[in-house]
Length: 438
Image (cartoon, rainbow, N blue to C red; front, side, top):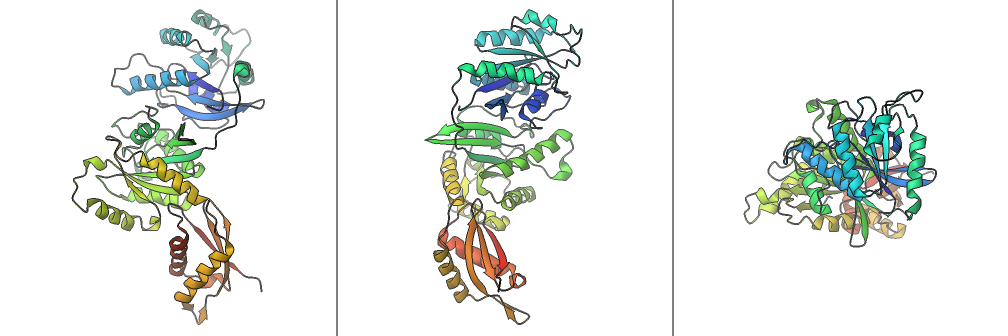
């Protein structure tokens, strides 16, 4: 990693996510009074006094979970974060006082031999307050009283962190390709993420809604740095009941905005649903690179033309996104999963493609000559010239006689001609009309 990594650890409901949000300067982690709201590891960058570091928010360490339970998997996720981190923030609750679970966690942290800052949260007043002194019994040095909710003593906490970074070398942040993984609940997004990463970074359960936050997972593969963003399954608005899930869906939409390429995950057994069409529409409107990934392909009974027929149906159902490549994979058998990154690299390069103005206008002139624009109220559209003015997404401006004469069907015709001649596979194009000044 290019920056020091700081993991926030502790038992459930001590305010880890509130502290995470305070240190990263936003509402990144979902905060509720319900224990166990944070289930996966969240990664975000923070900065203090010119020093940048990566902060990890983890689920609460619950030592009572059964082997196959969600709480047991949360514990495993926190233990992995402990291994990755350079510095550990151990958060305890100053209101409830020292608990037996705190002592178990302290024993785990002492065994790690890593720097630990003991943070006593929920201390509202530092005058004549003895609530946090009992935490000296944990044997982790001086406890630091704070209030993450009200921002008290946060500066002192960050100063302590900076001191721990003194021995860590600083490097430039990698040039990430950011990949968002989106789809309906229970289509296998987290399973695919884990296969791509080659580790159990994200909790996998058959229970829909297991992933509640957008989870950033940086990794390096064959000379390229990636940031994989697993998002919560997006239900239709009418089916979102819990406040937590509504936050999760909003965060998934924000993840689309900040990524480079989106993997739209479909369930091979269910095909394209109305909600899949809505999700693909979000991606298209955002102008992001798009790859349609059909998961659970191993469960489909196949005949000679099954894949071709399935692909044709996807093209019909997602007619506005015919430019997106389609991959048929299985997270369970790992069939063709490794092809995903290869396609991501290709689509990301297509997003940066630029066309020379002279070559572009040759293609447009030929297209207009072959199929002239239709007339409207006795007037015909005239295209004087075209220029590419942007990338990610590629943006083309057409200088014409009157923007009101542009019909949607002819716009689509010109877009298809651009794709036929220059590719732009997996990339949404932006075409705008501008009246030429006489």
